Length: 176
Image (cartoon, rainbow, N blue to C red):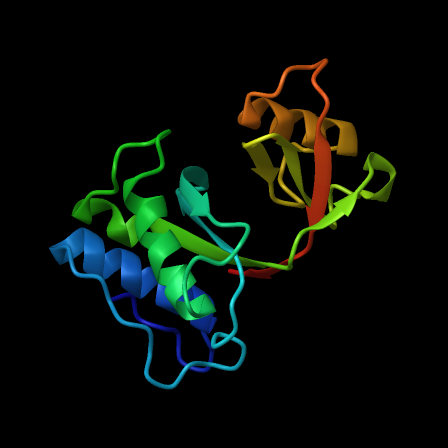
């Protein structure tokens, strides 16, 4: 496990995601949430775990609605999925573990909105049409406008330009 610099507290959400990825990638073990959960991790919420290697995205998986009994369990599940099942990347190998940087986003409950209610630096967006949904987190590098944010999420969902869709927005608590 990576050493923590003395005097510098490491975020407990990131620490948990890191432990989950290392245990699973190293020996296929799924860790249990800590017995004493840090404040807030006992709640339920959707989470996203992003993994970067040398500054480039290496995996990102999440849930906009909770699927686990606690945020801690949600982080563990999504960390493992980000490391092993993101369809854009091969699974992370043990020799990559020392080169990874993780971040965890805890999502608020999505609420219906219009495009005028969005701010791409403050709100994430879900574009939905029927069962198809595309999600984009807020404040992402290269996403400069609400129109661009909505367009990316719409395309991720496979929703055509002329198809009707609904918008939902959410905020994130970012841990890195």
